[in-house]
Length: 235
Image (cartoon, rainbow, N blue to C red; front, side, top):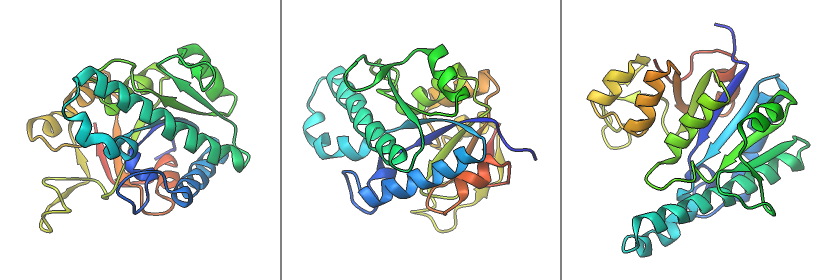
């Protein structure tokens, strides 16, 4: 299979925490930046959405008693912190980036404007989309799907701690069976928990494939973007 020209890479906030339970691990962020830079140097245009769990987990207990909208806004701001950390790591190794925020904060990031984001990608810049969709009640998975559709990405690359989609959690059930390929409908009907139902339904309705792969295997992002069979394909 030929490789992809434009991808949307979805990273969890925990991916930036390394082995820690929360926070940002500088060494791990630099490793991720090097891998993403390698993909960009191969000519692939990359948009990135990073979650905020590594920051938000530190205040999660307090947030349980908060108004949902307030808590969701805090989560969105956490993604901005992660986006800036990844952007800085990429810029330090000579890769041009732009952080675009769905919540306007001009001193920190560009406002998200679809046409401008596409132009950045065409110029070879890595665009990191922050602050979710700016709306509460929507996850960063949904934000990733929305941005992927808007920038006309060919695939959502969902980076996880496991090497694909299983019929049950492989971290808890050693006998879990991995799928090489699975349909959107099966993911939804079996509640496989890859991404939230809203994002899966959006991908289904717009024929946007999802590849779920293990981020902890070095070189997987490059192999996936080159069209090699890595992880599980949802389409």
